[in-house]
Image 1 (cartoon, rainbow, N blue to C red):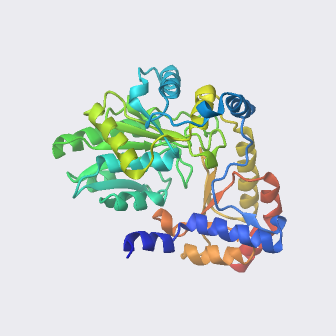
Image 2 (spheres, rainbow, N blue to C red):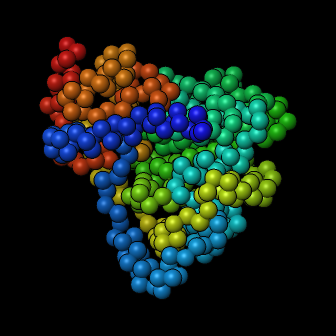
Length: 393
């Protein structure tokens, strides 16, 4: 009568969104100020004024044109605007033909996996990882290979990578800056990874693709470099979203980039288009294609996130919590005060603290705090965190 796999997914929603929905209900019951919601990556930074102006200007045009279908992979003018921006920033020579505008990074990754996966394939991820990777990989018929990061600093563990990547590996997904930990992989590590993948591709007799998931690319602290991965490894496919850098999470706009240097790039690009067709991801929101074309070089506003990071880490330092200091994104990876992360998250709820347990990220004993929230929520949460710490003392 129905698909059992889809039923299971529907009955077991993501831990992040379940906690977010719980928070919405709880705020309605006891008031927004009484709930300290660190659950979801919903940017609190205002959308840039340039974006607002672009929206207004677009809506002044002929409404038939504004809201009409574009070509399935996106309007060529918008795609070329994105290509031109990448070329200015990274010294590349991309064109509109290398890009598919998508409904955000989620659609981008799902389409890319659908385009690549064949029966018997494995897709490797670095743990901790964004939980939906597992859903997309397994839904498209591949096996997920989980490779743990280094336990000390959550950087790439090359011994583990060497052992886990085999001839069955079709692709490795990386996410830098990383959700949930906030680490950024240095250029030297990415160069070493590229060398490893070239060696493994030769041994396997086929290219092993590197899928670079980049919704947090611009969200880094202290001027830290985020290397352009396709310049280091030809068989890279970039999946991107403007959700975070321009505070547009609900508008679902992003892209897939298949660089011309990638193995059989034209066929891969066509397969991405075919995946978009098969999955129903054709013609990303037309209004926001126009907005992105106008605002593609708009810088991310980092000052608020930097201040939130300072407030939160300072408070947790004072209370005695252990965490990984993030170099990018807007998440704090905090060690749970007991081995069972879910039990710790449940205990935190009794103090109206909404902290995402690490289990669904492929790790144990941690929680993720999203600090892209109003600074006052962080300040007001201090007593709740103090009470949580007192529970374990």
